[in-house]
Image 1 (tube, rainbow, N blue to C red):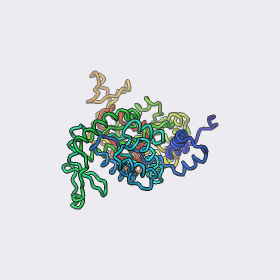
Image 2 (image 1 turned 90 degrees about the vertical axis):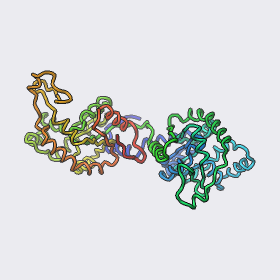
Image 3 (image 1 turned 180 degrees about the horizontal axis):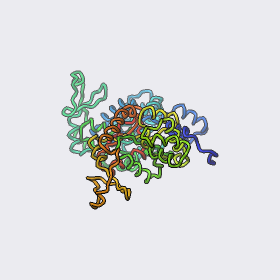
Image 4 (image 1 turned 135 degrees about the horizontal axis):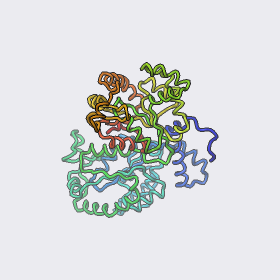
Length: 480
């Protein structure tokens, strides 16, 4: 396709990212290649009618007694997805293949892999699975089943594998109890229900220690083949820990999105109190990813130095130390952020917005960041960082009386302190930030929170990971 004669308006890029247009088209193309319909146009129309790319598609795997059923039930409750297991498939009388599968079960014969795959495909084609998503429990059990699912176009987005030592699993199996009414799994030691009625109807699964050992052996023999197919979307979780921790780790993983091939232009916003390290992190991000590093205060000074019309308006305010009116700031900032280099390479902005009114002005101008970071730093650390900063008026070199002292007494004697780094001025600036930060946090509800009271390297690694990875489907409060 030829490049457009004019650059796309800023609102177009934001709309495409927010609505997942690229992902929608990519998913549609994948479905076409998988199903190869005779009428592609009609197929795409039907696909769009049923399309729900955010619906979960999850497989929960693991050896017997590892907690697959409990995990699947808890995730289904949280994600409002449909749980699918061998038991639920065999109890679904409306499925055409259920009767055939039950016949194998009654004859105590192993149900063929192809029949299982067809049964699952039939169930997943139901409206509830398409709209709400599904969680497949304990399947596929081997590589053949996994390939049959792939051939049928059943490709999970997330695979969670539970693991624990065989001795732990055998011990856990001896205390396992099943609620036949709800299919919830309990344990006589670790997870006993408080409800007396539930206690009375619990039954012990008919699985001896010898049979358990055979199933474990078969699982260990088959799992490497399954791992080979799903290794890029698979997360292993230690099941030998409190149930709450296991569920939390699984939930965090299944709510993440995998790296996308969609074009992505970073539009990054750093908010934080003075001295929290925004300038350093912005410089590191700009250096590594070639995004445009923009400081609002520096931008205003450049406008004054260039003697532009807007710069002439700004000059009296800067000379007298007064805040520049928001209207004037927005004109300068909007012009810079809509420049070709910012539009093509992306940008990292700091120093604006400082309050909710400025944030709303940015939004009205269609300047919408796709990653927002709030830097958190204790007041004592802010004072320690800023009040001890010094500058050499001869060389322009910056020093810190504790962390980076001057190398010679001669340099030390001529160092000067910027008036804004005096404690009284620092306190005023921090107070202004604290008064407005809560409103900004509510406005940018998908923001990430950075512990700025640590070395720059781990801070950079965290920021970088948040930038390159897509946002979770239902974003949790991310922080370090």
